[in-house]
Length: 102
Length: 533
Image 1: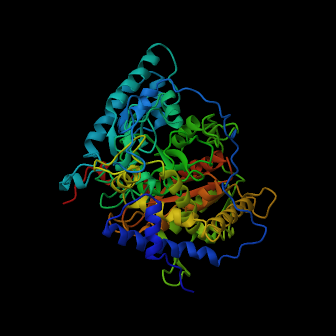
Image 2: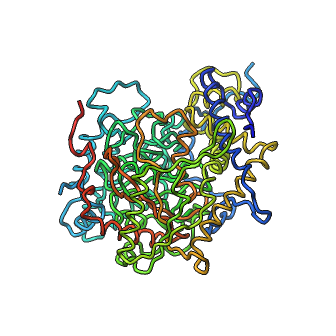
Image 3: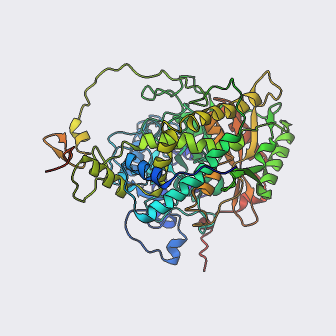
């Protein structure tokens, strides 16, 4: 059996989708490590899985109250939240132009 | 006995009885931190002297003012005749993945290095409300992604107090090291694949991963939301029971926290183990890892001294009246790491999308043309290699083209891992176990820089612990000896859902029945005051 490998082209696509930029050194390291990890993941394909097994999102079924009602509540001190932003203007979080500055 | 060597239980009892002031205990803890911790981890350039190389470096931030204010409050409550709570005056360190208002909450990452949490995590608030004193934030692998604490952006990384040439384990390495080095009596850690238990075993302390949902996750910076569990780290079993007692319970702000009533963990320690059925499994005697070329699973036996410690513990428990049941089949434990590679990476990639330089945290200082470039630059500069690797892996494994091959399949194998535990603990089944006794780690601590960089090998150090996270069941590691290099060995007791009381009771019995063992009189290197040439 030969282990499946992620190709350089697919790797580049993932980097773009992940909104990352990598140095050459990082690219070399992360590409190799991803393929090593994939070798481990591929071992799951050798396991016979009975037909009646259902996917488990949680090991133990959560016993909590579930999501709260979707009621809007004002935060008592919104200035503190905006103050966390790296840049703000007039009480609003500021970002560069979405489509590119002229 | 010095104040810093006292257990949390004893400190709280003395403070509540007026025999000791909380402020005295806080001062003693601050002095111990000054004595053994050395320079705190930071983003700054540093050069370590030989002496600094042999310090613990557990703390990123010592919150001295906060600690003094909290201890003063406890002393004032006592003076007014009020009970400050079960943890009155107990010094506690917090893994820097929990939001604590008034402190920086960095996740040991550059991208959050300047983040001031606007609220306090529920688990931390409960510790404070019970009279606990928060001494500061301790180091971890960046975003908890690792098993040695070396991947922290805040350097120097933490050393193992038993031998500072070795790692403390991770990701809660700062937590377990601070407790082992008697800087604090307790620490709050998190366990997603073994991040409390593996470092607790490496540092010779007690670490408990509660049942998923037993302790609120609110205010914990999420790694893998279906696996993350906050839990206690202490030097003895009673202290772990005490800390869990304070933290457990439903939180209306965490929809997955359980409404089930909280047991009396301290009281459960008073019972013995007569008649309890404790299992041993051959599936915990070896590590299984893939050959990188063929993908075949190779088998390597665990360290002999670790195996001997498990068998010796079984003898101790049998003599105390427990029934040892051998040959428990746990055939899917060996797939815990490959499943973890899928589930945790997919969930981590999702959770890490929120860090973009817009709402909080780091933003690139370079000039950018548009918002997309801001995202890319910020994330490129703010994240270290390990978060980048997890994001990329998670996106690949959950991509529409591959999700059925990987993600759906991993979730099915996760169900099979869970079924192994259900089968072992089924009260009407073949084995009817109360607990499973296993090694916590396949081997004792490894040397600094010996594994770091090899993400596959690093992940496989969690093979004995990760199945419990997939299944959601509780598990505790307790010290069980030293290997021939003088490094601590940990053994693990795994229980059925919400049966923390039983695994603590068994652990306590083992601890009580080995009080006179020679290894218990050996102290960690940093407490012996030895400086190596």
